[in-house]
Length: 442
Image 1 (tube, rainbow, N blue to C red):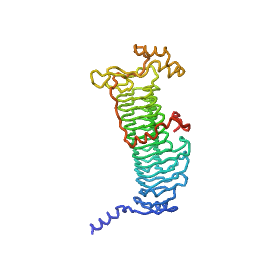
Image 2: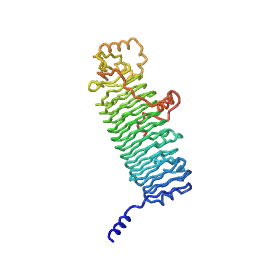
Image 3: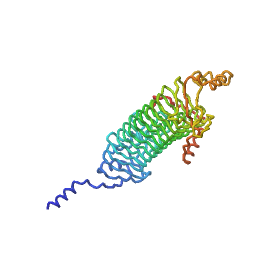
Image 4: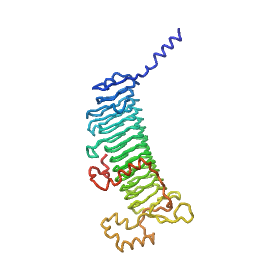
């Protein structure tokens, strides 16, 4: 008798099998289904409208087709998740409230709601698309997020907002309109990869974010591509910034970053802007077709630049300062498309060093009115003298081992078509609703 009793006790100790429950549209039906579900149940939504807001307070899976729409009715957050191990799949979430101070969102993941997975949702007309607000190890995968366009850009919400949520994975999301595509604030140890972001203020915006990887993302036609601010040990790898307006990549008070394999191309005022950023490794990137290839300022120190290609920028480097800076590493510098170089021994390294700026550049940057004299004989004489007698240079950037051949970073045909569609976007029209240089607006 002991063996049957033991088996019965073990069976009673096992958790009940998860049940699948169909949920039909109608007022209150989704909230009722959540309240009546057991932990681990799967709720299957049918096509139609479901009234929100709702709170998921136990581990559940909710899935449905895109035609199933959970509608917030303009009040607060549409779906709030307060329990761990929740899964949302496939359906539409729309109509959050409009209070940015409350971070109204399509989906909000609260502290304690760990290991949540949100996959394949369509999030339309919400203030913020998804707000990961304290939950750890969230997975936000393959969602389509379409933000609002009816407010000034700085007053809209973000596609995905990550606050104090370590271990977050953002992968394969398509984000368009709203304010920032991904805004990561006071978070750490996460991966944001393979997302495409269009028609935004910043594609990716870091504030006080540590040890986080941004890889394989695509920014097209945004005001600014990748803004890494007040952050440490970021990995910025293999991203594309195509036709963005102000900066393709900005390192502002960003330290110890690994920046490699990125392409910044076309229409941008500054491919790379480095402001008070230190100990960053910037290698094997391509900066092409910008007003300024690299603007370097505010005492940034101990940055290594090697293997990069500076191609057809109107001005390759803008650096105002008296320090001498070497932009090559272990005998390998960068490629400069305006460097008339020779390589007699065929080792791929130019025989002469490269200096992007001279004394007149420094004068013109500090005294813009002097631009009226650019074509005068006096200015030409100064420039000829400095090219003939380099010892008179006032400090600045030198690449002692410039490369003969540029690094090439291909763009997939479908992405190139999107890039072509936004070409010339910033040459006309008014964009006064945003000031990317106003670093206090987040």
